[in-house]
Amino acid sequence: MTRVLVVEDDAQLARALAINLRARTYEVDSAPDGASALRLAADKSPDVVVLDLGLPDMDGVDVIRGLRGWSRVPVLVLSARTGSEDKIRALDAGADDYMTKPFSMDELMARLRAATRRTEETLPTPYASHLVTTDEFTVDLVAKRVRRADRDVRLTPTEWHLLEILISHPGVLVSQRRLLQEVWGPSYSRKTNYLRVYMAQLRRKLEVDPSHPRYLITQPGMGYRFEA
Ligand code: CA
Image (tube, rainbow, N blue to C red; front, side, top):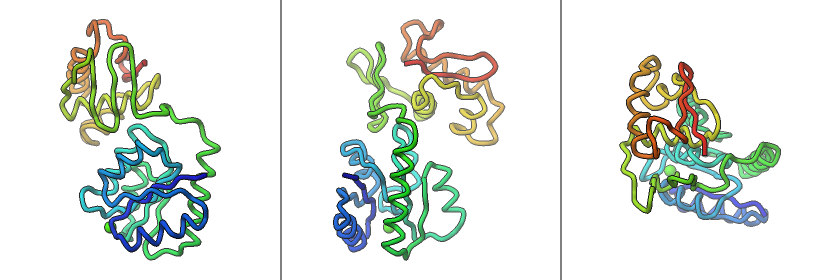
């Protein structure tokens, strides 16, 4: 059984999608806004997400970014926005496909089949769940919380963003340039001193011995890597 999460604030369209999907034996969960979409994605582990970009509480692109912190679930964007810029933003954030409203139900079904087929062929996701646990701390990628010794660790948004990128790619070297561009923006790609400062802060909060890190590893001159 394939499970679809439909994220759409237009109640009539959401209902039409659910009816059509159920008629084709999909299991359907519906979310009318971004926050409930992220919560349902974590609770129900859908096989594919159909996502409207214009949501009442947040931009659909931010829903994609939130999901991509911990999940590789295929995301098919349904949008009334026809501009190529919106399409590029959605695809860059990690959407797998993009359809412009109005759309034909048959085409949507064909694209859903293609999206779920692709996941069956690809590698398993780095984490089956949104919780990343080490001997020292636990990170909840959905709630955006870090716990250490039964207490919440307070992170600044910048520290969180850095940590999120690293732990979403366990064991993988993430280049200084990529971290700087993703966290601070394209014009900061040479500000490696920013990284040194923020990584030192993160280590003080998460490592037993910040000067000999076990989890947040530096590859000198290249980048950083998270070891679980
Ligand atoms: Ca909408």
